Image (cartoon, rainbow, N blue to C red; front, side, top):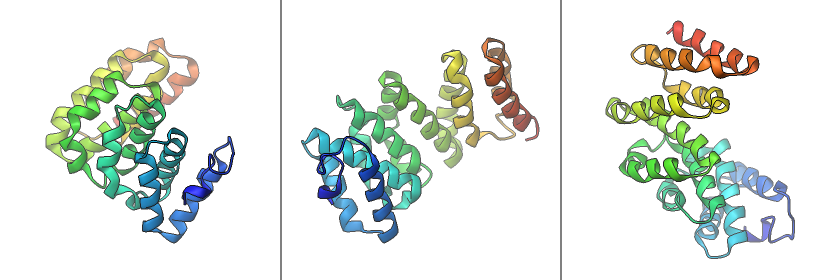
Length: 207
């Protein structure tokens, strides 16, 4: 499978990696996926970067095919290789609902990656947090305050996207808390951003 990667083909675009992900999803080729995981964990930076692209593209389509590699992704979320760090958090965001217990075991590491990571890492951390809240009431007690605090303090331009990512954990018990935060932030947003927030608040009001 490594020979099908973009870097192996001398390509600078991502199309070969996407095509490989689609092939592995169609065939559910566990041996092929393991080969990609080995490349992701390997020392060749170009190969590893292509492999994490393949893996999170698989996660987008058939997350069950990569859920057994959750520990591999967690091991890279604080990598010095930023491509592997945010790519791994993207992969985790695809599989959190399938393996929440394993992910929560390493929650401190995931939280640290959120606090110190790139924009893409942070974006996908919010998805991981929200799905953890959905998985277990005990997880929600620890994780929900982090989401609320984030929405209170993040840059105004980030509020709509991150609130939308968090919306999977909206319920009757936490709706009022989300509404208060969004009402406090909406005055700092553009008209288009406000429209997105108003749509979310309407959803919250109906819960």
